[in-house]
Image (tube, rainbow, N blue to C red; front, side, top):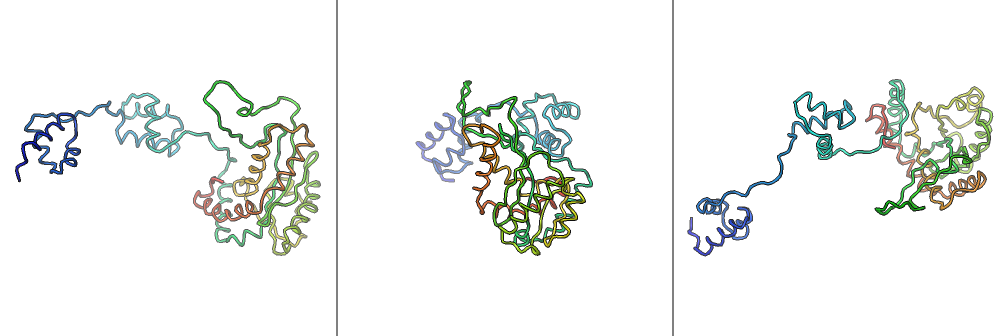
Length: 337
């Protein structure tokens, strides 16, 4: 090895004494790592100490924590803390467990509300998805999706979001105002297809099979004509609500040229009209003042519904193949739609 000039040796030693690492000195002076290490040892310079407290949980311990949550054996960090103490004699705080779970890529959030799924429900959902897994977007474009929803006068069911400052003072724009009495709501029915939204119907009183039949004979038939669908090629979708399955309604449906999609129970996440309802409610929440009465609420609902663009409807229809694939992957379980 070629001997280093004395000045260069002095510079390297000086840098090492100032706290520079062997790696840094190697790069700055373009000498080998072994040469710098040798000079450090000859000069009696000790290695740079590592600061910071030793981790309380090993990789094995952190994997244990993650596994308990991911597999559903435990739901809370406090439960995992107790399991660590019981299984390995490790006594750490709940916050230590939380930090470990964060490092493992887990996040805390509100549980999503989903309908209860029995083994029978899962089986039916899985069978439905497998039967329609090969359907293309073109196949789904023949379907008219339908449903009812309730819209409240105050605080529509959609989530309210806003930007806020870090202050203890509440502002009108950061508060979702509620009233204990005198709110009321409107129940509506509608449908949609790849051709856009269908006719909207305000339901007065109690929705029974007779009233629902009138809606099918009126708004549904008018919507199919508006979509310019040939009835014999059209497929109608509805859920398994008792009034939808009543003898009166079923007898009328059998006489129609369009077919009816055999829909699995407990499957609102498969029905894209649920996404349209969510869009409608979010837009209704954008009004600066709540409606003065039910009549004004209905006017806003009609106006907002009719502004939903065809492109929005098309994108929802295009999501159907992915929904089917997701249900198959989830073995009939819930999906993120």
